[in-house]
Length: 253
Image 1 (cartoon, rainbow, N blue to C red):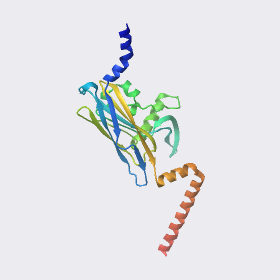
Image 2 (image 1 turned 135 degrees about the vertical axis):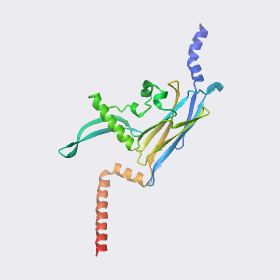
Image 3 (image 1 turned 90 degrees about the vertical axis):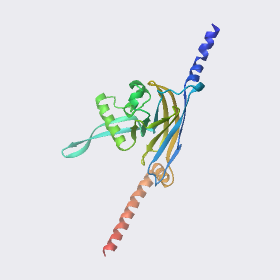
Image 4 (image 1 turned 60 degrees about the vertical axis):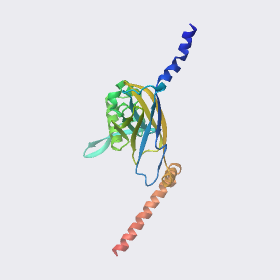
């Protein structure tokens, strides 16, 4: 009986010791946005550690997800009424990732089932965008599709099948493109090890994207001194307009 109780106590440790472990990393932990920033490319790489010299599984697949800070979003739908395009219906979403990129060693719908994909938010269609309206599900889905389409076209949402390369069953790497107008904030790079349709290991690395130099100064000024910032912008626009008009008159004369 004592041996049985001891095995029960040690069971979680024995299971974890037999489970593979991920050791991930990213090429950049901090990305600075300056005036010449045209985008970046993140390299996500790492290793799969199999305990006890276990042979790597031929069925092992890797999916990596880079996700930006969540934010509330208001989506409006424009309609043409009496020859004019005006705002019509709208929908609020409480928690929308500002950036989402998925890369996997195989198409995600071929390596996990629908339930697992929803739990881990693997795939753009499986994101939990949290509509705040609580109204008609069909209407919410319509606005979700519109929001996702806008994010895709802006380069903020992407999926890449066969975007992860696995070498010798233990090493992996993937590349994720970061667009030039990427939102600033705290990002996460999540790596999932998948075998036989189940996520058996996961690990996360943090990434910070922030503005520096003149961009950081302007952003702080707009946030902390909005009135002075707005007034300065108006005065600067007037001054530039006057200078351009004066220069044009002199050239014409």
